[in-house]
Image (tube, rainbow, N blue to C red; front, top):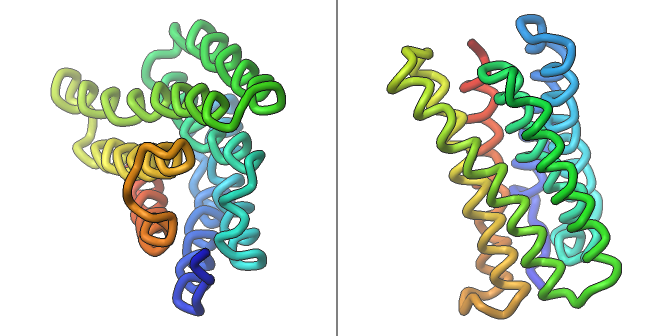
Length: 200
């Protein structure tokens, strides 16, 4: 197991500051519901970063941690849907909500591989929307190009989630230490992209 370094802790602290600043100062332009969704996602980022500073990468091997961290792409995608396709908010939230509850139930009742697979499905669906929706909005509906940074963040966090899931399932030859070694910088890039892309 890779031990957390001073540089890792500094990067996680920067992530917590960036995400926390978005919660405190960057929500004025959103509706109440969107603000709630974004606050949850960036709040989880703050909490996860602080926990990683305190407990190191061992925290990521806990089988219950993904239940919480998957809320990041879920609530970010819900906020985007509510902002740009409000008519789809209810149906999309019901779909993701049901899948999330199933993933939580499987986490307690099924094997580690099955639980990881179901959670990857939820993570993948919300991550795909985070990537695709901004591209469609910019290319077809003239939304600000800055919104594409959300796509970039979704791609980064989605790939890291897939790598962690595949590694836990034994389908990835890459070692866990290798995945962990790049995790802080990738999470920092994703967080920065989300905050910058949503600052419209």
